[in-house]
Length: 336
Image (cartoon, rainbow, N blue to C red; front, side, top):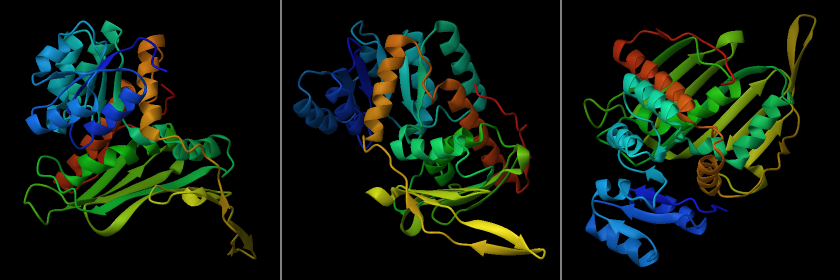
């Protein structure tokens, strides 16, 4: 449980209400604020123990709050994180960390210098099903990593302030960087603008990593059905994480193999095997990790350094979409 850690949530709307629910269940919800009077009234009825603010400054100045949870439009993240750091608060900000790499670097340095947790809401890193996939890769159950692809597709949730890449792809980028343990060497991305001239509704990003590992990410809010799927291909087996499915088939191991006979490849298909995983709500896990990081000082998996890596990849994808050319960003492999 949360112990004595108390947090305030900034933004109690579409996603913020889920954060309020989980921090309340963990015994850590002290306050929240939202600019919408209707939202404030509804949430106050659900969580009467929490202080209600219509001004973010009042929440951040409260001595009763150790951690600030930010769930607002992405364009506001950088300034709100800066404000919270200046107030000496630990921070959990929904993805992305901010929209500018230089600002992300500055915020990361400031959090490190102040000894404050700066955690980014890359929710799928905390999903028990993804952890099961990650364990398979780490144990080399699928053999040497070869290729990863990720789809995050749906109809709706169209945005005007950020494109589909920035809205959807941070989750996929964070999972792929976690599995490879590396930054990509080269990124080539394309985008399609169909509803608004300057906002991409669909993007396809191809990432080339060291050791010949490849990955691609396809995101769109103009898709006839919901598809949220991560597929990891190794030289011994493949594993698929389908986040739309519930139950035992959410994570499946495919022990297919390819052998050569007389110089020709022969594919041997095998029955898929369900991979067990914990059914705990991912957001509950993520919220608990934030509280624990404040209590014990341990770095969360999606700390500021991880968030900055994701931000650099997003920025490179955006540059590639704008220029039509591939972008090189280094390909450094690191566990930190």
